[in-house]
Length: 176
Ligand code: SF4
Image 1 (tube, rainbow, N blue to C red):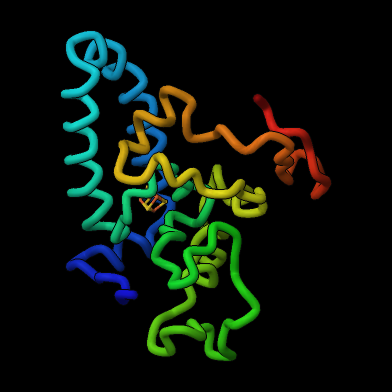
Image 2 (image 1 turned 60 degrees about the vertical axis):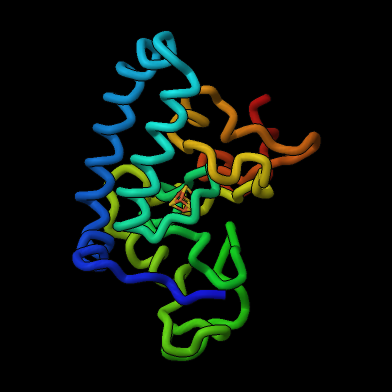
């Protein structure tokens, strides 16, 4: 297990989640425009390009582990896969009194940071309360952006239910 990498400037960016949130919203709209023609030209080339871009940019800012199912906007723009327990729903019961991780004592708990950062967000603050489905490991090392466009990222096992803020904390059937 390796400790999260803290690239120059990445901590500052992550501590400004409203800026990252605005970039995410713009990028999502922009990619929705450029993805269809790119896919038309070459799906495999587009996949390779996006994997390269995501490794570079999200790797620098978030120490992205390329899970292929990005939930950054639902976790305070803090990557949950950096958690030593790989929790998609956190925190666990082991957070130390100082807010650090029980596995890596020198490291702030990813989910404490996710909570604190999410509270600064304007649009996605409440998405932290959404119960995330089990990770689909077949998407590892694929482009999360393309998986969003192809709706591969929100496929969940049969019978899975999620808790949404709209459902008032009650389990609601997930959209197919
Ligand atoms: S949630 Fe997945 S895709 Fe998003 S930054 Fe973390 S590892 Fe990368």
